[in-house]
Length: 229
Image (tube, rainbow, N blue to C red; front, side, top):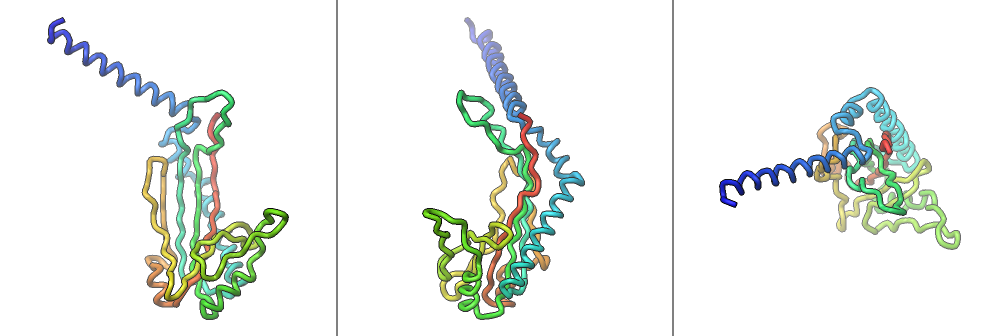
C-alpha cells in the first residue's frame, strides 16, 4: 500500500483509540457512583451543606471552650480548616469476592486547631494537663493505654471527654510545634479553606505575644453523601 493511503488509515486508528478511551473514562465515572463534579459543587454551595458546616463548627468550639475551662487554658489563636472532597472514581471494576467500597461520593470535613496559653509555666502545665486526661480505651488484657510523655514529640492522640482529639505543646529549648500547612491540592478536592482567629495572625506572632503554647486539635466529618451504588 502506498504512503498516501497508509496515512488516513493511521489517523483513523488513532481516532478510534481516542474515542474508546473517552468511552471507558465515561463508563468509569458513571459506574463509580460519584456524580459529576459540577453536581457536587452545587451541593457544596447549598444551604443545607452550609448549615451542617456551621453546626459542626459551633459544636467543636463549644468542645474547645470546655477544654479551656477544664485545664485552665486561655485561648489566644485558632486555625479552622474546611475541606470538601469528592470520592474516588477508581475501582469501578468489580472482582469476585471483593469487599464493596464504602467511600462516600462527597465528604465535608472540619478541623480546628486551637492554641492556648497555660496559666502556669509550660513545664508545669503540660504534666498537669496529661494527668487530668481521661484514660485511653482499654487494650490488651484490659489495661488502659499509656498517656503521652511530657517531653515526647506530638501531636498525641487523646480523649477529651467528648471524643477523640490531638494535643501538642511547645518544648522550650528543644522543640516548637509547627503551624498547620495547606496540603497539596489534588483533583478530588472541591474546596480547601483556611481561616484564622484573630484574622491574619500566625502561630509565631501568637507565641511571641503569649509565650509557649498548647495546641488542641478537634475534627468532625459534618457531611457525607453516599455513592449511588
